[in-house]
Image 1 (cartoon, rainbow over the protein chains, first blue to last red):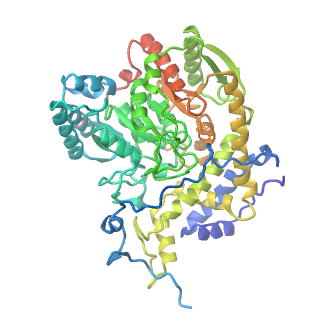
Image 2 (image 1 turned 60 degrees about the vertical axis):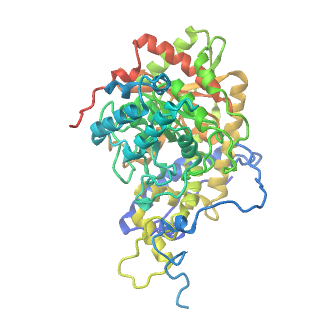
Image 3 (image 1 turned 180 degrees about the vertical axis):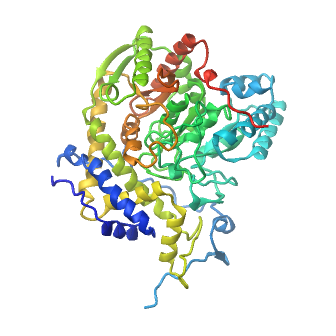
Length: 102
Length: 503
């Protein structure tokens, strides 16, 4: 098992914020760049515990696919589904442009 | 009439059934209490006096007609603001959901409504249940009724404080790493995290789906059992819901007999790092159990040293994924970026998430994004999932020898507001005793065992049992509660300081 990789730079945090779709301010980026390495150092101990022979456990109880009959059931009305929307038009969610100029 | 607020849910249920009091009277007494003290405590984010009183009146009318009602019908309840309540605001303590009114009920909410419990309102919490002190609520912190300069614990500090301040006899909390049990310990209330999958998570706004579990917050073990039975059970709307029958927790709480019960003290959860007053009350409680015929042995769970690390990788990883749905497109607030003409959906998403999420949520999303990212996944998230396997094996070995495990619930009593706000690692360390149960899906219960000598604040004892053996917790906890109340000459909460009542 390789050693913990806890070197995390401010540029890394900028990249992560982009992946997470959060516009962080400069102050927030500075703060997180200082804080994350300490947290990661602390949690990196897990790498010492787990050998290759140990299976990963993603869930406390075994999870199976759950199937049901493919029948139409009552669901939210369009009015209910749209009631919390920031913007809507003619029974549709109104969203900002998704495609860029090019 | 004011003493109605001090009655337990079981006492209220009996008084209602005997027509000694009406649900409207009980509900009004609690609404008045909330009006009088919640300015100081801030347990509630939203109070629905009108709705609660309407339900109460309906239950009274149905009872008068001789209708068969559920045992807790007419007993008011508070619900943590992380559960969807149709027609009632649900914010998860976050600005990103400010003003959102769900068009559906969580299964837990639906069961409460079907059983006729008036819902007093929604309780305060750390934003998206991320925190151990309720200081991370976007709407301001909740204060501990024992000392309003201190935290009530988190993330369900609102539910625990509402019950401890006699603003509700019952409340619902959710527990991802201890958010029912730790605030229970810090406010002198009973908090239970049921077996994972024992209570439906449908309509519970997810933080970490493989860890989150809803459960009861009450003033007595029997009350918790009554609420547990009401909200538990298989739900086809939740694919992780257990299809087995609900353990007979109410019968176990009434039995309250520890003769011959084998109790394991977890060596790694106590001693060094635990506040002396916490350790003393814990040791005394264990002595009471021994005196009542329980057999106590020390057990070791060596992999516990890795549990905190695993939790603080699994939890933010799942949270970063779950919280991706807050994209300002279909619900929640939309905040366009300043100074950008005709911004794209992606830009609106990023600016909305910056404006809507608080610091702790951002911290965990970024941490989770890192742990899941290419190149680091195996080292962090993958290793953490392996630790869960090792932990589960260690717990299984321990439960081969003993029926239940015990430890202090929290290493310390409630600390002053603000003390750990800028030190996330210090705050995370406070969850060391509660987190393992979430990683392996076993049930846990915290009950008050007295006040620490050095600060006079409540101390909690945690009981753990194997998956689906929730009834063992109630049996042992009820026995201990009975012995403690005999020793104290009443309930611990009756010793809480009087709150300043607003007029």
